[in-house]
Structure formats: structure tokens, C-alpha cells
Length: 406
Image 1 (tube, rainbow, N blue to C red):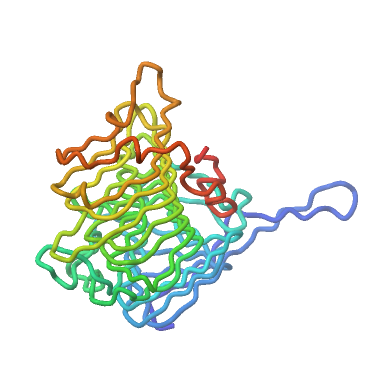
Image 2 (cartoon, one colour; image 1 turned 120 degrees about the horizontal axis):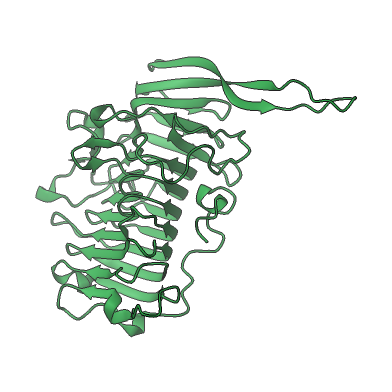
């Protein structure tokens, strides 16, 4: 390989205890020597990261146009910290491809160097020494593509947040709605969201102008400072997604995102804001999103709103199950005529956990700021919605492994 990658060896704190062949004693532990690859800058040619290595991101690691990074099932990737332009992250630029090929029994984990997790750790795929309270230890995963986005001034390409304007690899957007940025499956992203500027943090997973030719399924973001998963335009579909303990919004949609997010789950903590934050177009291009089959667990009694729909957002929201939110949580609809452009159906707000003095009904939960009177009403609220599948995350997700969804 021609990229600036340095390979070192070190001894990890994992050992194999061999049983004695006789006498009932224990043998001396044998340490496992794990190769560690440090990577920084642009990857210059196609490469595969294998599960018998630990990979460390040192700064912004870029998969540029024309290059494919393949990551085997069970691979653990760790990142140095760093602030602002020095923040460590994995950036897939327009024309680059990420083939992150985890499996249900061997998920890929992206985390901080402070995390002791490995694919041989007895708690894998759960926590090792860290937990959901440790946020902002590195950047995150950024995937950019050539699909249409609706931005101010109707620019075809725009610079993604979290990447300095001086780096052209941060451009996203184009004219190919079916653009293919690769396959991402059975992937955890933990403890990210480091600050890259005043009030500007990196999302757990950012999709900017990513096309429908990209496959994304079984992905999880845990303990991110900013949003869990954010869509800036594009048309990629995401299925089987989990966000736990994010500091801002769990699922954030912007710039006329036109794909579908299905079978997904959010679990809030004391720092979480909205389960859903849905924005519309910023330019003249319009789009219509779909959110279907979501289970949204708030953080009662302290914080977190159900959702916020604004800025002429258009799309559909169906088969949603909301629970464990506080008495003051609301489902806000604002931004001009956006109410008329969103269809709500089969929503269930389970308020049985609330104190008897907390009188929560549909009229209180829905805060229609538009005055249009076209928001959801009792006909859209159902006792039949179960939200996400009960098997979501089983076997591969840290959230389910640690029981946070219950």
C-alpha cells in the first residue's frame, strides 16, 4: 500500500487461560499479541481491513474518489481524539466506497482508543470499560455521495459540516439519485461527536447526498455528543437502525432527504433532545421522506422531546411507538405549511408510565405551531402500533446486549 499507514505491534489486555493437563493447577496466562495499524490522511488504493487487526484512526482518514475500503466482519476500529480540524474521523468522499461487511455474530465496532473492547473481549459486542455516559472522545463516520440535495442557492455540491472548507473531500451532493457509496451493515459507532468548532460537533453517522444505490442496514450509534444519524439530502434507505444516549437528536433529516428509514429505535438519556428532528428543503428542490416502524424511548422525567417537524418538511410518519417520555415532552409541528405536507398514521403514545397527575392527551402532546389545524388527531393515534421489531439489534447491538431498550 502507498498510503501513510504505520504498523505496530502491542500486547492487548486479553489472555487465554489454558486448562491444566493434570494436577488441578492453572497454567501461566498467554497474552494475545494483536497487530495494530495506524492510519491517517488519504487512503491511496483499495484496501481491506481485517478482523485480526485493530485499526487506529489518527486524524481525518479519507476514502477518496475511486478508492474502496473494505472492512471485514468483527473488525474493531479505534480513533484518537483531537479537536476541530484535528478531530479523528473516517470520511468516505464522493466517489469513494465503504464496504463495511459486519455480520449478526461479528459486528464491526468503531470507537475511541480509550475503549478496551476487542472482538475477543468476553463482553463483545457490549461495553468493556466505557459506557453510554462517555461522549465526544473522537469524531464519527461521514459518508458523502453524488445524490441530489436541497441547499441554499441551489448549489449542486455543498461542504459537509464537520470537515474544514479547505478539504474538497468534504463536498457532497450531485445529480445521481442512485449513486452507490458502498454497503454498511452490522456496524456500531460509539463515543463520538468531538467538537470541531464553536457549537459544531460531528454526528455519529453523517450521510450527505448519499444515493439509493448504497446499502445501509443494522447500524447503531451510542453516546454521541451531537446527533445520532443525520441525513443531508440524498435518497439512501436505512433499515434496522439504533441510536442510544445521543446528546442532541437521534434521527435528523435535512435538505429534502428522499429516502426511507425503517425499523428503527431511539433510547434517550438525560442529555438527549429530540427523538426526531425533521427539516425540509433549503433550496428549490423538493423531496419526501418516509419514517416507518420506529420505537422511541424517551428519558422520563428529565428531558427529551418526541419530535420536531419544521421548515416545510414533507413526508410520512407511520407505525410509531413512543414511550417513557416526560409530561412536558411534545410533538411539535411548525414552519409554514409543512403540516399539510406530512402524513401521520398509526402513532401510539404510551403514557401509562406517567404520574397520575400528568394529564397527557393527543391535544397536549401535539403542539401545532402553524395554526393550520391539519396536524394528527385521534384518528391517527392507535393502540395497535408496536413500532420496531422486537428482534431489532438482537445478537449484534450493544444497546440490546446491555438491555437499554427495555
